[in-house]
Length: 365
Image 1 (cartoon, helix red, strand yellow):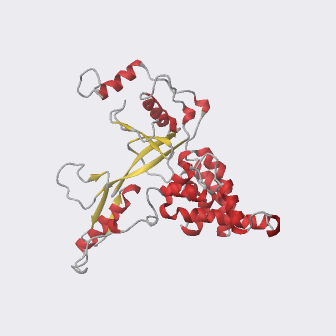
Image 2 (cartoon, helix red, strand yellow):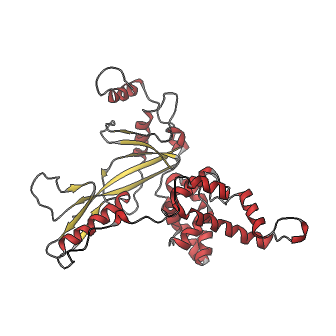
């Protein structure tokens, strides 16, 4: 009674389909749904709003919806460009919880108790307080509202207790972070700009810990395989290993993405990652950015996590199978699907009419 499901589909396109730092929203598509076209994680994210659905644990993107997105998005591109089905690097469907408060007043309109945000509900009979709806990006607001509701309806809590302080609590990684962190990582570790930017925004001040872990792993391998004597005029010890590390750089998980192998170990050792599926989808975003690249790194992710968590051969195979099953619910490129039609003259006129809100017949800027 508290939640209704609504599905949404997203696709990922190459970065060249949108200017860096610039996106758009079409609030009046061919069937009235919203369409957003945004740069994200060095790619382009295209998606729709919600559509009523029956909840399931593993929703899959509908092929007709993928093609609808491509056709709608193609209207905003130059006629000289072809937005092709094989340009879809990953596609996924999610179910958004639309919250309904069963304890809300029935007065007013029939949709007054339905929320596209979260709902904090209190059952006066049982005293139960629960949170329904919401989304990842508002988790701190949801926690704040829930705590404040508990304080409001619980007389036994002393009056002097203040409201939720989540906005005063720093997130992990704030310490050691500043706007020049990526530059410092480049200078200190010799990493590429893409890797440095990724680590800075993902780990904040903990980026040093990730890179130190990678250097430590490199040092152990070098000490085992490339011991140097002091009498040959070559560098040795930490100085030698540091020089090798800086010349070769940290080990990438996949050559086309800035994720490091050290991040997999870091996730298992420090951030409580226990499933390979979690790592390829959420600790990194690889499953959402490129389905085929995610499939390629599964063996290495399982190998690294297995060594860190002492997995048996049987457990490793289970993790591989679980990842492959998980990725079956993602869409990817399908070159045999053919091209999406180019925008027609009528399509361009439709776009112009939407932009010419003043009805002047021309655009002022």
